Length: 480
Image 1 (tube, rainbow, N blue to C red):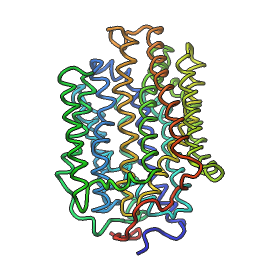
Image 2: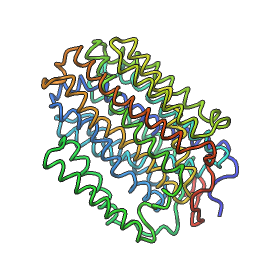
Image 3: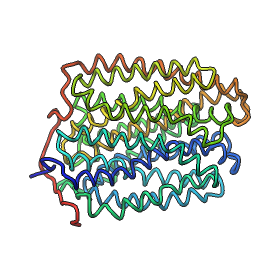
Image 4: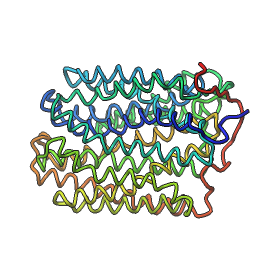
């Protein structure tokens, strides 16, 4: 049965433009919140712990639900789930915008995470359906570029909003984006579902959440008896989850996908890279406002060079992979990122911070585009939703982990027991330096590992190193 078009036409490219809306939004959302934090903190007066939860509760819950939502989309229809998730995301954004206290804002961010877990896997899985292997790399590079463009314009748009409106306005950005998506999706996006996937295993859903959330709680407790018990409990549920997936005919997560070398290495790279970025981005954005005393708009302008570099490097990835082995591209990109982190580790002024952050993003672009294509390309068509969910899980969990772990380390250095907003410029910069140094070491080691694990003989993107079956149903746009 035909699962993808032989060659994408005008409708598919218009459909990709529709899928760009949630992707742009997610990129913008990642940046505008950081810029809004000083205003938000001054209004709601959260504690340092509440501030970290406001930032990363979204990332942790989206990571916890991505696998479930990716598999659910394969079962009930990816377009259908995308439209449901877009509607829920808009509603949760309104709740966040008007939250009167830190607790309700944390709750709203958590609901955004659950709704957001439907967006990434659905968009990537639909791309794998809409475009054949020969065009999929370009389509995914454009998808990654849309995310990069969101990061680029996010600080500018967010800065302008914060110049004229209250901090809640940054959340209301989602409403028009989601409206366009929900209204245009039926006409431009095909429906896809696996007709023989079986029912969703609710026990597996419970075990997946029980594995992720206690570990997150343990990390947030910074160790201690309660934190250690939570982490051990989470790992125990993780073992039960894996054991159950091995027994099920239709598992929530098909563990056979990890038999693909490219799949496993790409996920590892995405996880650790995004952990590093999550920690550093928090401190760079706050550095612009707390140390340099820039307004949100001016801070956004100073972040533009790095974001534009990210767009260019993402777009250049298909050309690079046509000439060099994927392992070389990813390995060299990681080394460039490590050098950028090293510059940030030594930075004492604005110019060095901007230069280091731009160099860092020069390496991140190919990692985002190529890592995602490696994951999607090695999965069978009917498992594309699950594969996309794993890719998104690695990235989202990595970002949240970076904020939760590296954010705690950097805050401890920057504050010396005082509130973060009262940290001196010297101590805050020292916190940034320490976090960047840790990230430089991690990415340099990761670069060496990738160059060793993905040799020049590694299979090309989209090669048949995964199990493929044909139990799929594809309906063209316009049909419900």
